[in-house]
Length: 240
Image (cartoon, rainbow, N blue to C red; front, side):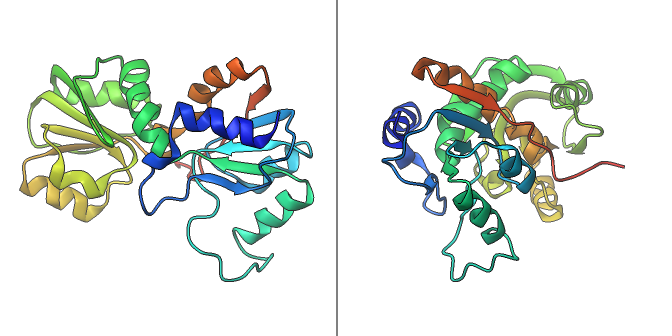
């Protein structure tokens, strides 16, 4: 099957037009006319993954390898060092980032990982209703995402409406219409802002909240009749 046919399938599943203006989802490396027999799914691209892949494969990732305009290709630096290896092995790459967040990832995490029903969807934010003690709920969240510890901003003892954005959603704090917001990459000033508007926060991690990308997409790719495997993506952070 040609990359163009796979791309069309992915676009119908999660339209690339939905991506944010700053995003770079779509075909990163490759030729739409290339014939593909094997697909690998991963949240990111790294050197170990490229070394393990067969030649003439297609790598579908959540995060784009190329975000901004490249002014040079210095093969000793990221991302040119990875691009070089991919070109040498004729490995193509399609990214499905903010478009997939909106159409699949947030909803999957709420319903399948946390076990709640979606009450409302608003772009990158999924809302769901609970009526639980904050500490008990925070412990459930930590368990669901296999977090070694929970970083929270606690502004109330109980929670009824929760908002969730996978990945990094700190910039959305002002627009959240809930008592508690689950997202990753929460910064100090995000916490201070949340305190000022009485919004509780639970940091669910960037990698931890998005690594479900591959297992979601795999279910859909099986309909294409192509071999697709999930790479063993690793969190770049370690907890000591």
